[in-house]
Image (cartoon, rainbow, N blue to C red; front, side, top):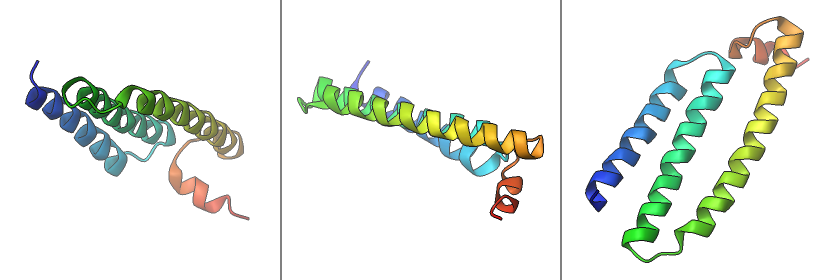
Amino acid sequence: MTLRALLLVATALFSIGIYGLLTRRQAVALLLSIEVMANAANLVFVVFARYGGAPGHPLVLFALAITVAEVAVGLALVLVLYRRHGDTLLELASEAKG
């Protein structure tokens, strides 16, 4: 594949993630949308490492480590939200402040 085609795939993945982030109300769907956006960014890093000579592979490993930590914390928050309210709607999280 060419550089342009790979960047279009990354743009499409990032756009799908943004769409999911803006339209979903469930916390798990939001976490999945953020994961898709992070994978699109990782794809851009790898594409530029392949075609541009930039050192993208260490950046991808670092980004994956951060994403794994984010998912672990996010899922812990989702579990707390589900145990407290019986659902994972984000509107319930604003009520859990007190």
